[in-house]
Length: 380
Image (cartoon, rainbow, N blue to C red; front, top):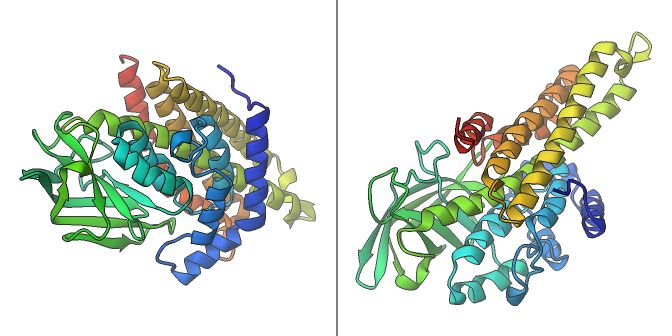
């Protein structure tokens, strides 16, 4: 398995890094946070990303995309992570587009995928519920057949970019008990559907998310994405791919946090010498560096495995998420520690990276959950 970028991927990574440096410094994220922007991102910048082809990287050419792989999308996501860019790549380009590409009807694909690729549509995916603890099959939101359509009732939590989405893809229980693997159906619900209410959530990383309540929301039979009752495997495959994308973002934010910390170690002086000359801090910085390199290899391996439909893909996804969760937290924690007292203040950007690392490591399963999944897949 190739664990280095090819020439095209290197060019894509450089283009993304240059774009983020020019258009999405952390100061932009701070301004959005301070303004309490309800969307949490900049629509004009999202449109620019789409014009560069990033939003449609994994969308087939027939629907306006580039038909490239997850490995290419990770090149972009790593750069966006470094700038803490809050645009809805995860919710829309990975989760929603992933569901539609893998399971959508031809009509659904023609309706939504070109608009996503053009940056003209944002979609959220509601799959988490209170008490689900990362288990995608824990679904109590009900889908009851009503004539030629469905009635949906329940609540989803932590739905990324729910506010401002044109539609939401909701997992509903159409058969079986709350934690059964079978009987889960994915349904595409317009944001203006009667009975659907989105309540914005305040997150520690200041990203846009919301509670989605459904009270007898009626949708037509043509709103079902994939086979009725067989949405679980589809959702699992999409979330696995999105997890790798999130890992790439976490790698980018950890790399940036580490770079900021190194710069501080070189310029902050105590006892008339840079604090980076202290042996204890050198050792701690070396530890972070090693973990970053290991995480990079894990992300590359997982992305290529997903692209190739490798039988080891699920295990490699969990390996990458466990590794990147630990590394992002390590880089954030060590950064705040080495910045000292000022690292705890809002004036310094290092705290933003720690907050994003904290939220990201809990998304799609934390390190402990993915270690357990890896062990289970390996037969332990």
